[in-house]
Image 1 (cartoon, rainbow, N blue to C red):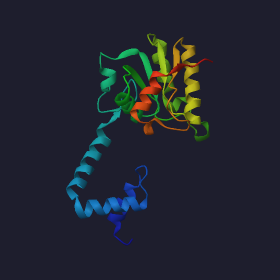
Image 2 (image 1 turned 90 degrees about the vertical axis):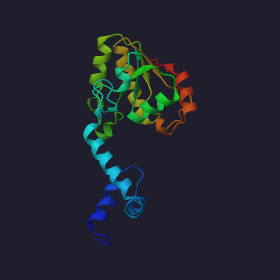
Image 3 (image 1 turned 135 degrees about the vertical axis):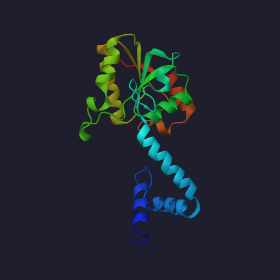
Image 4 (image 1 turned 90 degrees about the horizontal axis):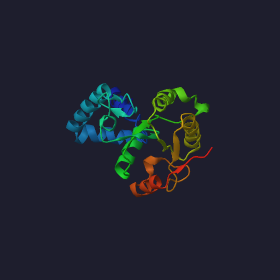
Length: 200
């Protein structure tokens, strides 16, 4: 190892982040060690704290420090509308870019039989229980416009129909093959206002 074991281990550890390859990880390492050790210590402390204290909301499965996230614990949210998204970042995008006042269910992925990801891996049994209790009028399907996202939306629409719940799908503005993470707020708001019922 040219730089020493600890430096190489830091470079390798930074590569776990999405979009960070060997060169970027090396630049980050040099920056922290050469110019900003206090920030590196702060990053390490907050990262360790987050890894220990952040878990999943028991109702919607998003990431939170509490048993219930702020959305699920709010008495002002419309619990008759559940928006199903792929990941916690999608919740943040919808909250920032639309006027949706319902609650969420976070799948933490999509159905993908080739990758061994089935309904149980996405917590769909928990969603089915929420629908079975009653009181849900609309299931808003806000999965991405990828093949996996569409397949997941179709499965969720079937689940909604079995519970006599209207399933709607965000429609306009989200490009085919795109993820919500890369859609601007205006486009996302337009997609929400133009959602439509899925007819099976």
